Structure formats: structure tokens, C-alpha cells
Amino acid sequence: MVQNLYLYSLAVWVFFIVLAIANGVSRGLYAPHTGELLAHQISSVIFSTVIFAVTYIFLKYSGVSGTSVQFIYVGLMWLFLTISFEFLFGHFVIGHSWERLLHDYNIFEGRIWLLVLIVTVISPWLANRILS
Image (cartoon, rainbow, N blue to C red; front, top):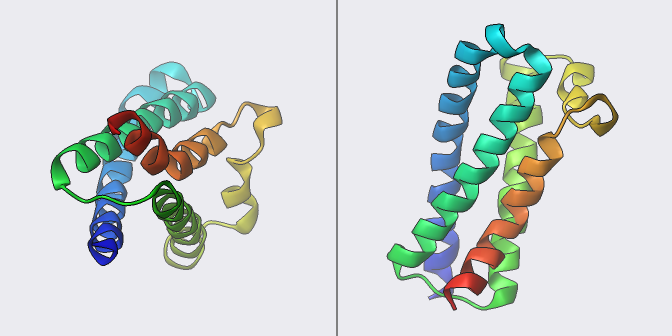
């Protein structure tokens, strides 16, 4: 049922928030040894891998199904939720400036947060394709 796909996908995205916080905390442990930029890059790669792995496991064991288009919609939903959360929570709750929030999008300075967003949007479709 399509409704289950979207509801379960929303629950998985909430789980991503928990995992993102854990990833951020762990980055604080190695950042003093690697420097801030490398720590950002390491944590972005780790979180991208976690997003895909969790998505794959979710689709393999949850029993939800859908079409390729529906999984593209799930990825787009996750992308929208992630960017909204990042900017709204980051600015209005944590108090980061818009400039600081946009900083992670500057690939010319070695910031690879866009990798996380790309993996977020394609993971549902790709994992479903692998499992099909």
C-alpha cells in the first residue's frame, strides 16, 4: 500500500535525525585531530553511507513496495525534509546565521554536504532498484 510506503519512509527519515545527531557528536571526537574541514568531509561520507545502508535495510525487511516513481517521491520528500530541518532548526532553534548554514554547500571550499543530499534523494530509488 502506497500510504504505508510514505508513512514508513517518514519514520525512517526521523531515524535519520537521530543518526545525524550521533554522527555530529562523533565528529566532535575526531575533529580536534583532523581539523574541521577533514572532519566535515569524513562525517559527510560516513553519514551518506549510513543513509544508504539504512534505506537498503528498511526496504529489504519492511515489506513495503512501490514503483520507481514512488521511490523517487520518497527521496524528494526526504530531501525537502532534510533541507527544511537543517535551515529552520539550525537558524531558529540553534541560532546559526544563514551564512553559516549555507557554508556547508560551498564545494569550492571542500565542503561536501551536497553528497549527503544527493545520497538522500537517490537512496530509496537505488536501493529499490538493487533489491528488485
